[in-house]
Amino acid sequence: MSRLAPIVRREFSAYFNTPLAAVFLVMFLFLTGIFTFNVGQLYERGQADLRPFFDFNPWLFLFLVPAISMRLWAEERRIGTIELVTTLPISIRDLVVGKWLAAWAFACVALALTVPIWMTVEYLGAPDRGAILAGYVGSALMAGAFLAIGSALSAVTKNQVVAFVLCAVVCFLLLMAGYPVVLDFLGGWASPGVAEAVASVSLLTHFEPMERGVIDLRDVLFFAAVVVAFLWLNILLIEWKKAD
Amino acid sequence: MEAAIAAHGLRKRFGSFDAVQGIDLVVKHGEVLGFLGPNGAGKSTTMRMITGFLAPSAGSVRICGTDMLVDPLTAKGHMGYLPEGAPCYPDMTVAEFLGFIGAVRGFGGAERARRVDAAVERTNLQGVFHQPIETLSKGFKRRVGLAQAILHDPPVLIMDEPTDGLDPNQKHQVRELIRTMAKDKAIVLSTHILEEVEAVCTRAVIINRGGIVFDGTPQALDAKAPATVARNRLDHVFRTLTTADTETRR
Image 1 (tube, rainbow over the protein chains, first blue to last red):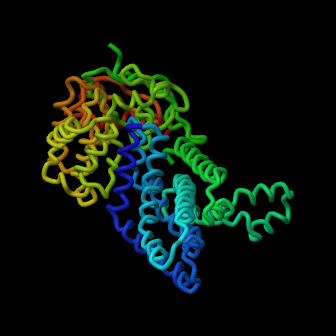
Image 2 (spheres, helix red, strand yellow; image 1 turned 30 degrees about the vertical axis):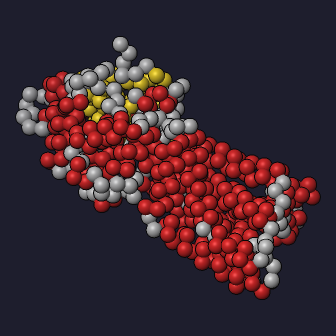
């Protein structure tokens, strides 16, 4: 475990060594503001809750989280440092987990910076704090799942743009798995059982209860399982294709 | 005492291409081995298998008695490695980068600071210690890579083209550094410069098409050249050894 800390620290500070962190945080907060107040009409609804904020959260993450994860492995491949880190006395598992933890910590910082929106509804009324907290937990879990997917996909290429697009597409499909877009596509040729199974892996169906303030252990486990599965895939991809 | 590096029957296939076809290499402490060969002969591939970056298709590698395939973390702990082109994180300063390497190698607090200082002093990086690596010249970057490799004072040091792209002064510096470390370490370095082998190495190994074609002292290599050749004798031997089969075909 002690070898994990330097990896997390390096990767986390790497975001702030480049303009990426600043650009990301400004974009995220700016778009969050627009979606919550203008599109989501937080004021006009006249309800002291953060539903408009959490409703748009997954869709914002869809385009912003891949920007955090795209560099994780693609950059190591491009500049050749993958040869350096994988010949240090540290396991690939620790490298993968450390990078993901750093990216997740950064995403959580971005989420934490939206607290003024919470403050706004606190000022305007008496919101259900438990529900808001549950929404934040859901958002953090969603970001963690997206990041694990993005990290694994970033391991297949040395091109960050490719990593970004792959991650956005896979996350979109997983978000939409419970919706007609994907199910109609499957309905044409897959058996109903398959379609049902696909619908159950939709990230949105596991996010919505938390958005409403219900933290179900099964939903938390689902997100944890997505993270573990993709980080495991990430480890395998690096071990198999280290030198390509 | 166990050999510092013991590689046996190393093979590597990339698809249908046999990059390395059965290399045996035993390097003892105190040896400086110059690894020579034309481009594409399998030098980097062999070094990457020895350092655990590439898994060999067949064969075994032991570093100071630890099998690279069985216990890679211990084996990698015995070893410092400068990959080809000396890749470093461009966004970090020299101080941050060496601190990171020290932390991953398990040093903390004062011990880490002491080791970073020692490595920086040996590679003359004091003047750029707080500069981001991306702003450094090629020579400095190479030395950052070297500092990273010697930070933990490893018994085994493997360097892929450590002097490639350096100016004559910087080449001299790197060779001096290698000479000062040579006494108690096993050092393997690949190079295209044949004088370098004469200057710093106690042993030369030439590979061609994935196999060893010469293994001996630089003097023995020199002796292979006919007496009639007065200048660039090593170049002559190198050409004879690595182009022999193409010439017989003609």
